Length: 482
RNA sequence: GGCCGGGUGGCGAAGUGGCCUAACGCGGAGGUCUGCAAAACCUUUAUUUCGUGGGUUCAAAUCCCACCCCGGCCUCCA
Image (cartoon, rainbow, N blue to C red):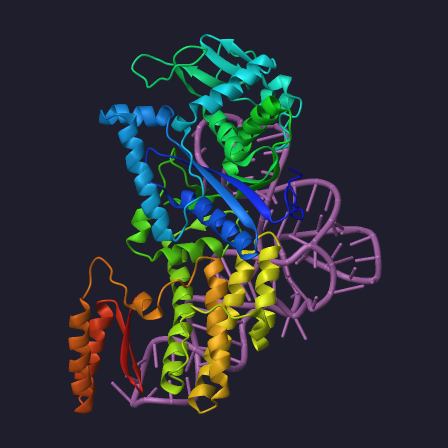
């Protein structure tokens, strides 16, 4: 609320309640949505990794103007539209490694809670009817504007709000909308209609998390008016403080053809959908790209930067692959699968790395710094591998611990969840089949054994053009997809 | 116009009073390894420098003031 970093003090020690404004389900999600979801996904993961019991609530807005508009354009019931895009959302999130929330409430399933809140606001004189709608009277709520650092006078002077003749104040917002002919509608004490947008988050967060819950998150653009309005509704109706900490993530910008920078948004039509991206990049690469910037900073999106993230991801997996190979060759009894979480007591020489990681995450979820630690560990593993191969058997245990720790820490960020071989051999929608690659590699091997290097290099070149990079090692030739 | 963010190397991005002669990644250069590569490792890539100009301080990328640029919010938007 103070718009600055503060130590996290929970309502109840050991338990955290978190609500994040989800998406309006009328279209596919874009990178901007991916950012919020990934950011709060790691916040939840980290709080849990710190031993907190977290209740994570993330809603679906499944009724609003755009949904109605889209459904009527497609001439389908709005429920069919929203079901379709809720399913798409879940598929996208799974591909990004974003876990499900504990509760994923839908607006249309909480009409009763919303109506109860509206009734309470009416009873307290904080809301009024006008033209069949119910409005919130912002000037009856003294704290209005506190979250966004605005005051009513300033807001009004610069207001772009179209004057609604039924509103007493142009900043008043609708709680209940009277149904227009042909629109979906529900019964209410104020006539057939549907809820305004802001009321759903107040009603649903209150229902599942109670008052004065710990953390409320969402995109920067929701700070005003959405979150300001939520506060007005919730605190106005309950008379209780509502949220302890607000977290807002920064925006994703895109560079236009003319080099201008602007925010990615549905209304500007300049977005890339998550599924378009995932056709070309593993979900973890998209995560790395997002988490390599602090969650509050603006983030510029471009395919070049995504490519950079992919190279970084390759580096991390490369260390895992190298460690696995070295351990298998020299100490087959060791398994560096990352399935075992090393005990803190066994971190040994890795303890300072782990400490750096947790210190970074403790400081307002500084994922760029935490990721730097991941790369530090990868480098140390890579350095240790030749020592093991030269016969220093004791480094085997150290490498194994390093790998286990690397995967353990990366998992908190939702990274390195894949098997390295699988990661490098992942199949795109086009490209050569694995058997074909193996056949060409064998051909090249024959040529090399005949010392026909020009022929061998031609085959390697052919594979390279197909996006396959070869690596010759003492144990044989391995390959990676670019 | 009001209110918020932000401007750090070729690029991305941490760092918000001394550990910064600025983390980490990508990219570049040279080297080791290799038939040649790839990956990895080593060295190197901001040393009159952290948008510009002033100021405070023993000490500033970090605090203060002014200015210049960029983005966002003030209407639906993550």
